[in-house]
Image 1 (cartoon, one colour):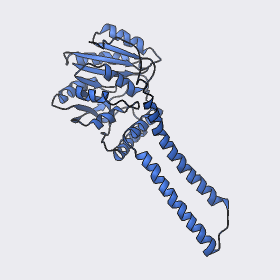
Image 2: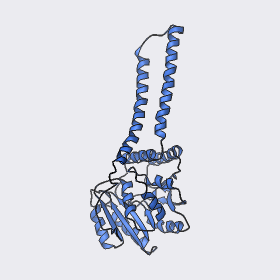
Image 3: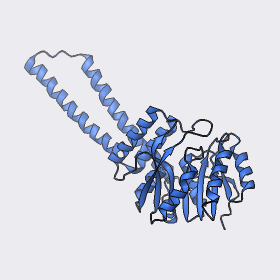
Image 4: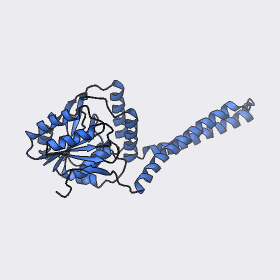
Length: 309
């Protein structure tokens, strides 16, 4: 059995057409499957469309979360409910082509645990977005001990072994493509050209991208904390040089005149470094605080999934 997880947030314009295309592709290639539509607190008519689709097709199930918990948590909710031996993660905006799924299934049947889709071309994405994404992945691979493939998203197929391993990772700040890379196992890419959205505009704003990047870095690297420590040593060394120069100028050169410019520069510089360090530490402390509360990762408002089946 194959489970397909689609996280949905305000996708009313293109959702129905995309799911029908997905259904038509899958029904001819897979004997037994389910499509899990995870509504992540949509404020439009997405839930109405989801319920209508689940009525028309018995293979379509839905999970309605109590509010918007975020893309990665919505996918995690789908993983908890998925029953398939293989699970496919993909977006519901039409950019991940359903036509690639049969090839992904054939590839994973060769003995792999994960087949991830690697983009060789991206449509409807700005130069800035492409470049920042590439730079981010290079930075993340540099500062962590895991290698996350460049030009990949969450579009992939994983087997039940990987799903069960992901369920053992309880952190609240989810970064699934990094978590799957951290797990190891046998992984391979399959290349494709990513299309533009079917309709509407992307809900993944730069603010959400920055938040996801922070989650990725703090989940897999202590590098920011080391940076704060290194900055402290550098500032201390610069301060020592300033002290030596001050003494030299006063007692040897006899040209020292007290003034506020050097004092203000030192205060602003050292103060900025201190605030940077405190901010980095604060990011980690905030994440520790979120996890020690042991609140549920998400809450389900309603669902037609039989968890006992």
